[in-house]
Image (tube, rainbow, N blue to C red; front, side):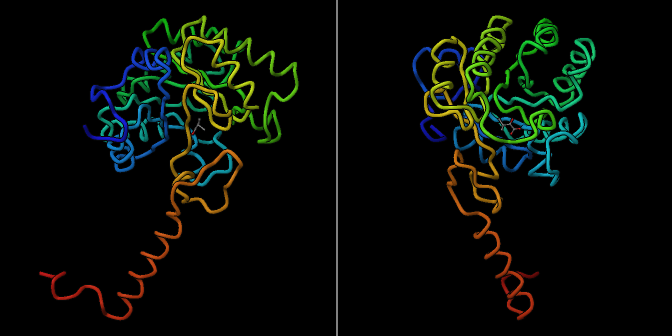
Length: 273
Ligand code: KIV
């Protein structure tokens, strides 16, 4: 069977993710923003591909996730959908497309689903967005929650430091997680919180809890693909494990190409018509 540790070749569904949690099987999730990367990530056996609004940072070079637009997210999600065959594809709703009110949130959610063909959406926030989450769910769209460090609120936080270290904020996060589960979310991402809090939320909830910088006690893990492949030299938070040094691999390959062109070593006689 193709892919690493894939024991079921069928398309991953929200139902299967719940089953994986019940069976104690960890869930692997990674971002992708384009067709080629999605093909590789999917072919390797990923359970969930997230078309993250981190595209704003790693694809467009912005310092925050705030500037990316609905049309840009739909473009990325559409490209990923062409490359992903098995993984469940979740697309982030970008900043400003669901915070105004539930009506606007639902119509933007429907646009992403209709135009990209993705499987589910992710929204940042807890009780403050519950009405919108309810309305999107009522439209038949699966929703993944996102709590802890929510990068769309960076201007409110003022820092990317670890969240919910204090008891009051941890209690709010736990209440938000239960509220999202009770409303009908199929999973929740917890970003950059203490490991014991991540484990506690995962043990209290029946839906899968996927962590990024939330310790090993969650039901699964998510990373940004460019970061875990070592493409971004300047970004090395404690939670990030780099599985490759693509920055060096690519720089060396590109440097060799430049050298070959300038030395008239490329193309050779076999590389021309
Ligand atoms: O946009 C993103 O990549 C994310 C992950 C960090 C979970 O939301």
